[in-house]
Amino acid sequence: MAEAWTLEQAIASIQQTEDASQRYYAAWWLGKFRVEDERAIAALLDALKDEVDRSPDGGYPLRRNAAKALGKLNNPAAVEPLIDCLSSDDYYVRESAAQSLEMLGDRRAIPALRLLLAGGIAAAVKAEGKPHLVQPYEAVIEALGTLGATEVVEEIQPFLEHDFEKIRYATLRALYQLTQDASYAQKLMEALKGDKLQLRRSALLDLGAIGYVPAGTAIANCFAENSLKLIALKGILESQLQRSSEQLDADSQQLMTLMDNLL
Image 1 (tube, helix red, strand yellow):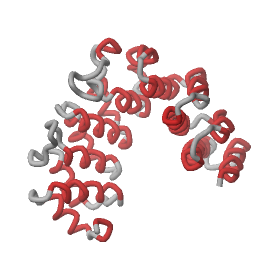
Image 2: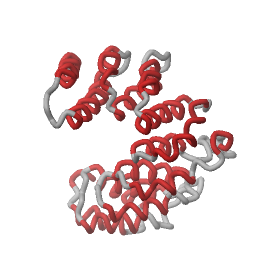
Image 3: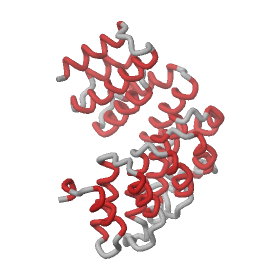
């Protein structure tokens, strides 16, 4: 039913307060279909302040989905409200905001993201009574890498020793982006040989995100779903085409061949 909505119906659904599930899916719909209408942006920004939709743990489901949607709509009006969300008492709102700020690519977010690393790796422990850490470190570190926050290199390096593999991978990804030191990317390539499929998937997507061309063959040969390998190779190809001014150089052609073989 949701996919048959019009813009007006989606906005009306997100603005009403009687049906929490409708509001939640309306926010998802606006992001999924990348509805960049100013009315949609306004409705999602209002949803970031919602006090009605509360989960049993005290979180804000609608705010979470609104934050995710705003990252997909490429509107600078969302940057400051999403930065404000980084101080939310809902972990998942902070996580969604960090991910969306990464997508929006606005360096104004760097100071607020940096604050979430306060205390360093010693503070990066499980939140009391929660299934997650005290901060969404993976999302924050990835955002800082994408935003080119070279000033935080020394602050994120210690996270290479964190107990959680995904945080270590996020750190390798960010450090490669911030320093262009190939050793970080090569360690991500080594992770493609790991025993756990979930972690191989993470390494695949991280390599795709950083556009590391030498990883092409290793990605194609990784024991993971072809769909994910294609996503990673597509990310590398797009980065390579940007570096080569849209020209099909030898590296680009090799990447395209690897992709063709996976289809």
